[in-house]
Length: 120
Image 1 (cartoon, rainbow, N blue to C red):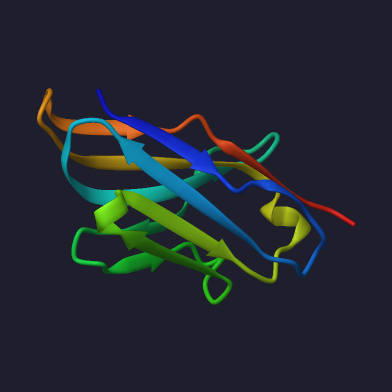
Image 2: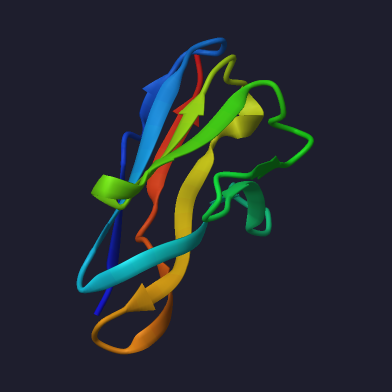
């Protein structure tokens, strides 16, 4: 069974920065794509950033130029560096990973989420 754990959320003032981590554990053979989603109060879950196995990235228009997604394959960890944060970035951030494991073949796993609050 593959488990994802997000960390790094918290309270930050507008204009500030946070770095989120998504660490995958279990009998993982490889991580293919890893995505960061977020869900604000009263909003639907939305895709924020994505990174593929070859390192190519994609971002929602609302975060382009402010957020950077990266991965450390040796640690099975994906990061989301968030800068110039705005109150509208306030949300629970989730990571979703797809890959292969020794236990059950292909997997599609979600983390439990980490809360980011941008407020003065």
